[in-house]
Image 1 (cartoon, one colour):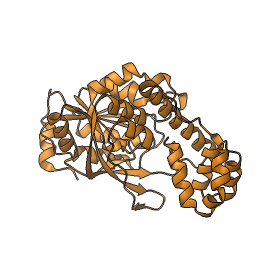
Image 2 (spheres, rainbow, N blue to C red; image 1 turned 180 degrees about the horizontal axis):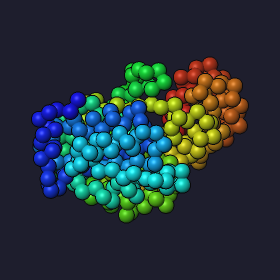
Image 3 (tube, rainbow, N blue to C red; image 1 turned 60 degrees about the vertical axis):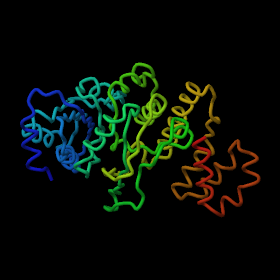
Image 4 (cartoon, one colour; image 1 turned 135 degrees about the vertical axis):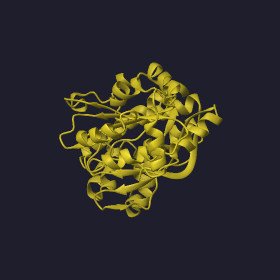
Amino acid sequence: MIDTTQEQIMQNWNGEIPLVSVCCITYNHEPYIAQALDGFLMQRTSFPFEVLMHDDASTDNTADIIRDYEAKFPKIIKPIYQKENQYSQGKREISETWNFPRAKGKYIAMCEGDDYWIDGNKLQMQVDCLENNPEYGMCYTKAKQFIQKKMKFSRTKFGFYVKDFEDLLFNGNRVPTLTTVFRKDLLNSYLKEIYPQDKGWLMGDYPMWLYFAHESRIKFIDKVTSVYRVLENSASHSKDIKKQLVFEKSYWEIKNFFSEKYLNRTIPAFDEHLVLAYIYLRNSDRKAAKKEFLQSREQTFKVRAYELICSFEILFGLLMIKWRNL
């Protein structure tokens, strides 16, 4: 629900440079996009902000819903409506190409069109933190997870404290993208120095967080401000085993790149069989997991631990996660 007083304040923003640019990419999010937009517009702030929407040629009514909001809030909602789908043409860096370059804010916030914010004080709280602590380059919070297929919230929340660069590199990503606010000048440095457009990485957020953590401190606020919607078929939640494997390989490539760049060392080689065993076990296919596991290069690990691991799947999952994060 949009606060009436805040709505009047927003309508009076005229010619003021926004302090925050909210970047949202969307494609065929008709059932969810209004909830995302309402989450942006419910923000109670002492500063102006803009909402940069990028619709990637949706084939449903997503663009029409955005147009309705744009007509009501033309000073805030600033969309791009693609006529041809960019992602399917291999142009995966949507934010880097279309939203980030036109952002006017000192700070950037991100949230995709199927996720949404639930705390009206989110932006104000995070901007206050960054304004008062110049050593921090990014601020993030916790998020609830909504399982769309089951139409219910998971007991598990996403978003945990990250100490520093090495913690984020070796212990994995714990930063929910939809909760982040970060400095635009730090983002620009990342784009110029790392140039992710050339890397072909399937994850756009994790390498950014690694760079931010290396170049600055990052602040975790232990508060739920947002909802991450878990859909059945996405890059990180695909049912296709091959797609899951490709995604895991890209995750490994990101970790290895930053380990070599900043620590001058490589991480353990990508073991496709061991990763497939992890994926199959995650999908409750123990027979396929066993087959892949026995082909793994981890001979000592195999001989000494296999029977125990197969008896205790949780233990195997923990061991695999530890290997994955090396």
